[in-house]
Amino acid sequence: EFRRVLFRSEEMAVPANFVSAPADTPSGPPRNVAHAYARLARALESGTPVDPDFDAAIGIHKVIDAIERSSAERRTVVV
Image (cartoon, rainbow, N blue to C red; front, side, top):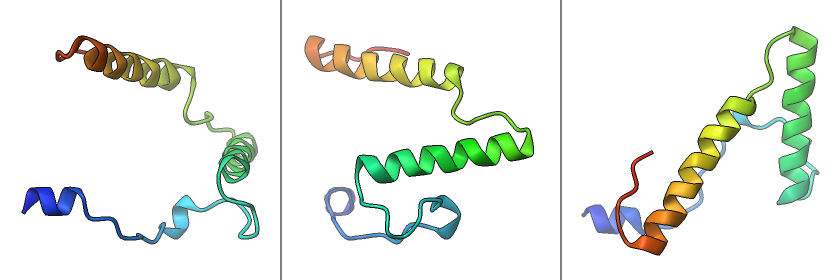
């Protein structure tokens, strides 16, 4: 049953609170950039930190590096 769920591919609706780009923004990189600018604008208007910040980016890159090393070395890499 786990395998069946893991490989099921059906569209899921994106919750409204995760949509910040205009509806007519093309998908892919343009939509990603539009979302980033919208988050930046909200942070600047509210005086809150921009998320994700540089520390979050470092953590994400450590995970990506561990995934690549794990695949290349065929072993578990602890982050």
